[in-house]
Length: 191
Image: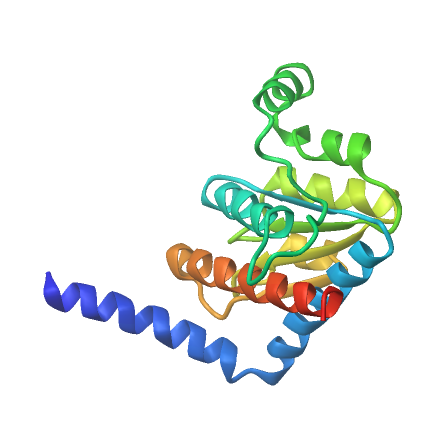
């Protein structure tokens, strides 16, 4: 078991090293932070969605923006679309699970907002539908996903692919990327 633990940690580090050593990927991470900071500076908001562990990541990232990350500063408007159980269950019941995020984007989204979609596969049907809904409203879209090509990658304005095909390693990296993006946006807005 000790060997398994060390091997798991080593694999996680290797995934993060592949991110760190990929200049094109680093540029995309910086671009995502700049997009979000720009939207927030101009009075717009960040909408975030994912399923399962990615829903938890959406909630976590939204909390970092709303509350604080590295330092005390004014709250920033970020909403995790996976947290309102009444909206989720009503939409799922009346319109199907496919529409749980797209309906919220239609209700809450405005032109120039940012939609941050999180999907390890990039192919979650409700995330694809939400990306399409965001496009119709001229909401800029960012997808955090894994290494494989996906429908979501084709539908998003900016796609950040973690260089792994293992769901746990992708998710571990997604929360790191969320932290990095939040830290950069926070510094850009409150120097």
